[in-house]
Image (tube, one colour):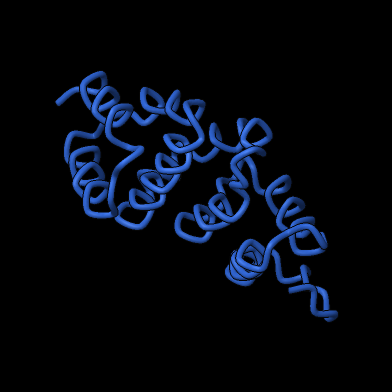
Length: 151
């Protein structure tokens, strides 16, 4: 199955997909080493397609963190365009699963603290953001979480 075929399959079937369907697609994508860049236009589809595609990326990150991590810098560049999807928690989860790419470290760390400190951020996103910060490399030991509970 090539990228075009799986793109078409996802576009047609993501809206009604189950977790089991997404696990099958995850295996196919990983086994065939499909270039995720070819699938990223799905992020700009209908909200249901976009949301379930983000879920699929989470499945990929759970199964093969290094595979997804190589695409995280690009995904980070389009994060502002996804505000309608409330994808902050999803991105925090990607960084928890895969780590923060070196080229985005400063911006992502700032963003995570912004999410933690914002009264508009939901509890799930805050807790995932805290977990990402807690597992940062030792080189970031000078960073501390606020002592006032924001969650």
